[in-house]
Length: 194
Image (tube, rainbow, N blue to C red; front, side, top):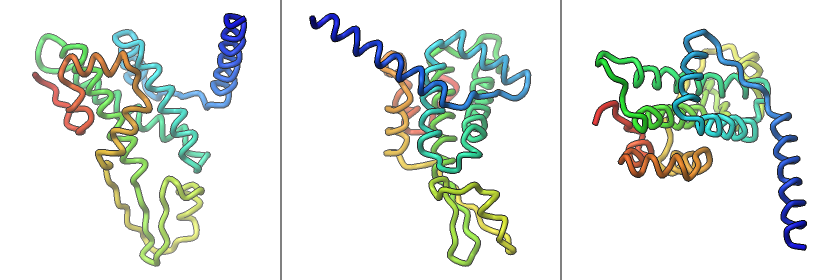
């Protein structure tokens, strides 16, 4: 009886997961180089697909400016792919070790996501826009005559830790811990060399 119950729960979870995947916008990567880097990343680290999917789901839920959420994930991912590219293609003949490369990618994902979540626009008249304000940047600034100030913060350690827990799996955490890269990723200081 328990086996039937477990199978029913498993099928229900799979259906819910499939429904959620259909609701998430499809991510489009711009540029041949970025497409190549994404393919390389997914070949080196198949688990990176899970990180990207979780990031997309998090942004879709947290960003109320619905017209820009796919663009936000795309921007975050493009910055992370550029960081990954620097770890793969460098002046030395060999690539950096696999854990370093995925650490560099993850570090950039966390940094860029924190930056997005902590952007504030101020028009100087006590009106502010944030990612959580519920309207797009374009709509917010459409009725503003004066230039506005942009403040940006790469985030607190608590935010980085929470995002890390949210978008990574135990397998990836274990690799980063065993290669002594987890602390550097969490602190936002992942270095290219060891």
